Structure formats: structure tokens, C-alpha cells
Length: 170
Image (cartoon, rainbow, N blue to C red; front, side, top):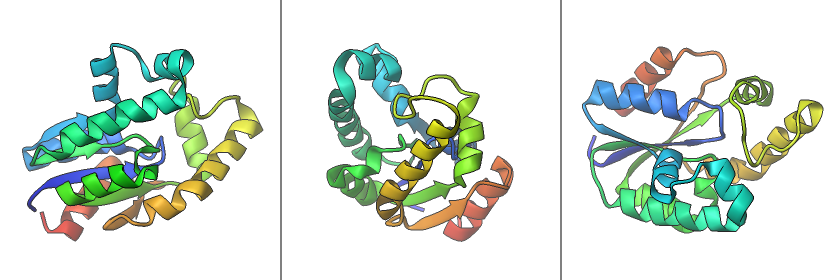
């Protein structure tokens, strides 16, 4: 496979952990877009949201997408909302193959509940679950444009990696 392998999908679907596995198996570099933004800005994502708001974060995200989409032979894990921006999606699409990781809302709730602050998921309990469901519905039209989609709800990272490699013949 030429170009980059880009993982999109909602938070908690496994983009970062799977991205690292794929990069290792394929002998490619790995970039987690959120980690790049944190490193470049010298702030955590929650700090960026708190101090500057989502609009500022999305500007940093767009800059980071422009930079990484110029590179080749990477595995890239995007943030959950990265592909809401049509320019981001097109830049990523032009740089390689896009794989969307999906997961059911209840499992996303479980996975993200354990992981600390998630700026777009304020609140807890039922409110958090309803927010996840609402955001999944809003983002489905963006996620559905991927070249390949796989549900990560009941699969191990190794099973998902093998499925993606089989599907993409890599």
C-alpha cells in the first residue's frame, strides 16, 4: 500500500493503540494527531479547550493535518472530530487510505469513562452516554466516507489489525 494509513473514528474506538500496532507491523512511522497537537502547543487537549476553546483547537488540528498529510508511509491516528472539517478529510484522503473504526455507544462510554478528561464529553453517567450517542449520530456522515470501516466493539486489537491488513492486502 502506497501512502499513509489513516485511522478515523470516535474517541475510544482504538485508533491510537491500533495505530501503534499497525505501524510496528508495517514498519512505518506512527503519528497520533492529538499527541502532535499537544507537543506542538505545549498544552494538553483539555488545557487547550479550557484556555482557548474548541475553535482554537480545531485551528491547531487543521495545521497539524496539513503538516502530516505531506508526509508518506505513516500510520496516522486522528482525533474523533478531525474529519468533520472537509479540508482535513480531503487532505487525509489525498495522502492515503482511510480506515474508520466504529464501536457501539455503550462500549465507547465504558472505554472513555476510564481515561480521564474528554473535553467534548462533559458530565458523566446517562448525560455522558447521551452525548456520545448524539455525537456519533452527527459524525456518522463524515465517518461513512472512509475507504474501509471496521467495528471494534467485540474484537481484540490483534484481530482488528489482521482484518485491516487482509482487507487492504498489506
